[in-house]
Length: 285
Image (cartoon, rainbow, N blue to C red; front, side, top):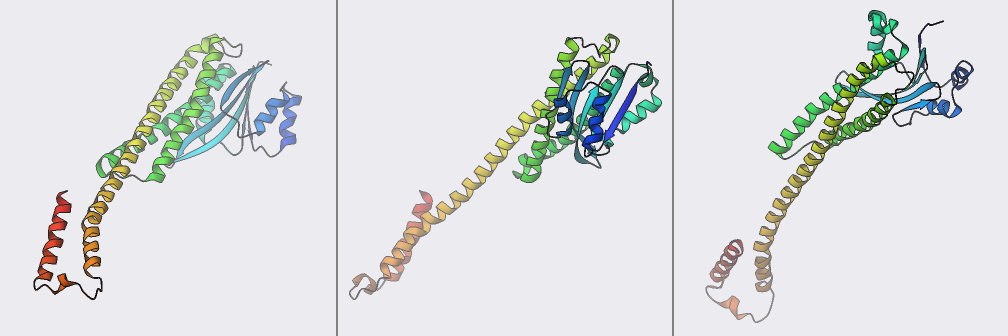
């Protein structure tokens, strides 16, 4: 008929109903299994007559990082997305469909581009949020030599997670564009090229942030090691002073019947002088 349609499937519990999609579209059984497997890696696969994609999405909500999962089937005139719950991060897509004429007038692959663009924008927003945290961590480590390790490791984990989500999508999307996939219109290549530019920039920034976090971790560990060395230096100094004094105290405190040194008139003064001299000598050493 020439009509385009976008179908959003929310909830993956009704396996039988979702499996009925196979009666309308030629989908491989293994792909259908992947749709239900929410632990799939991020990917875009080219199949005979359609594209299959999996996205783990990170997005900000009330300054808190949230995570969600989405799989997608792209046919010539139809795009189907599958979600575990209502996708809050796709509110912009609904707005584009209603207000942006090109979304309705252009082929369905343009909506595919907009979907990827919205997800990339969310990842960029999360990265900017993490970048601000990294700056705070860096200032804290340099100034106070201490950092909240739980927050630091959580931020580092988020960076690694986004990096693992962005890189495979960037590489596989680039391959699909280079191969001039039949589902991607030539006139839409400039849009995908712009998207690739954003993905490459984000991937490069994530790689830099990953390296920075590693260096900050090394700096933090060095600070902790230096602080421990200072503590051990102090303990060693006290030990060097008081161990010889403890030996003298124990030696002259022995209850021998004949201990002529103790009967000396100035024995106490000599002992105190000896202790002070020994302590000063150990501090000097």
